[in-house]
Every structure is written in C-alpha cells, then in structure tokens.
Image 1 (spheres, rainbow, N blue to C red):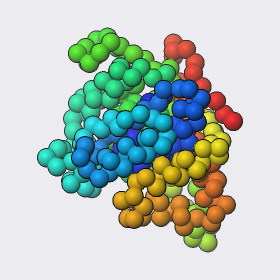
Image 2: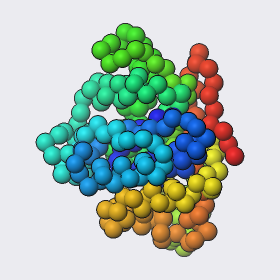
Image 3: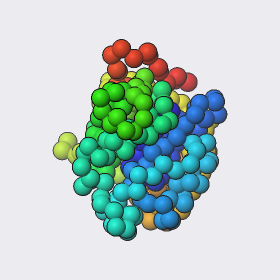
Length: 250
C-alpha cells in the first residue's frame, strides 16, 4: 500500500488508521509526501509519524508548499512544477515500491486545498502511466497497481459535524468537503487504531501548535471527534484488466 500525500501530517489525518491497520496485518506500507524538504522540522515530524504508523521512512519529493516557500528553500512550489516532471517522480516511487493499492485524495483535494488537488491530478496520471513500458523508460520496470482509492468524507458526516461545531446547518452555497454519500464505495472502521492515528497526528508538533486541521478536530464534541478518528472513507477507482484488490471493511 502506497499513499501519495501533499504535506507532512496528511498521512495521519486522512489515512492514518488505514496505514496502521494494514501494517499490523503484515502489509508493506509507505507514504510519498510531495512538499517539504529533508532537514526541515516538518520532515522530522513526518518521520516520527510514519514510525508510529508502521509506514517506513519518509519519501519526500522536496517541493515547496504552495503557501510556505521556506518549506523547501530554493525549490519550486509543487503547484508550479511541470506536470510531466511531477508525474515521473511519483511513477518512480510506484515502480520501486510495487504497491497493490495506491491511496490519495479525491478530486476536491478532500477540502479544496490547492496542493491536495494537484496531488490528486498527479497521482491519477502516475498510477496509469506507471504501467506503460513506453513511458518513463528510465524510471524502472512497468508496474500497474491493482486499485486506486481516493480518501474522502461522506457529505452527511460533514453536515452533522458542521452543525456540531457551528450550531447551524451550512448554507446552500457553502463549498463542503467530501462527496455525496452514494459515491463512497469503501468504509473502514479503524477504531482499533484510533489512538495510534491520534498519536501520529500529535507527532506533528508544529501543526498542533499552529492549529489547522488539529484545531477542527479538537473543537469537535468528543463523540464527533471519536467518530472522525475511528472511521476512514474512500472512493474506489477501477482499472480494467487488473486483478481486483479491495480494502477490507471491518
């Protein structure tokens, strides 16, 4: 199982329970992180998070976060990298690691983050391109993952949590995260691994102090927060001709 994420901490927030679950079940797991460079605080935090989740060492592409040039001094923003270059970097990791399953964000980047949306575009292209012997011929032998899963949230869950935090329903023109419930193909109950997921999130101390996604989670009522930590949802993308591999639902 190979996850492709935008920033350090996304591996824990969006796929932490899935990574821990499959590592405990004996699967090889790994994470490609497209922004931030080695030697930065967040790279060190990512290493601690991956150790907690059993997902190996960081695989940092070393590009800059769209909003933080200091994340990779002297390197271009991931958003500005030519698509062919970015796809090739991910193809190389796919061919090296040879995953059966690749996980990344849905088309809205889960909540509209521009780096997340670019990772979605790049990952979709890379999973397809990795299987062609005509493409990126100097980056290893072709490898076609058997399945691609897009991390998302059912819209009903988003609405209920919105109401819990703000005390009202979202307005009709609000751009909400997630997808309509019927588009969710896979639900994993990761409650058994929720404490490890929470610990991996807290490994990103700089983000805990700053707020961001951690602020949203800590502001939720305890029951709602427990639900978010104990459940992960995906949309499965099918590939014709590839043997079927399915994430097992608890």
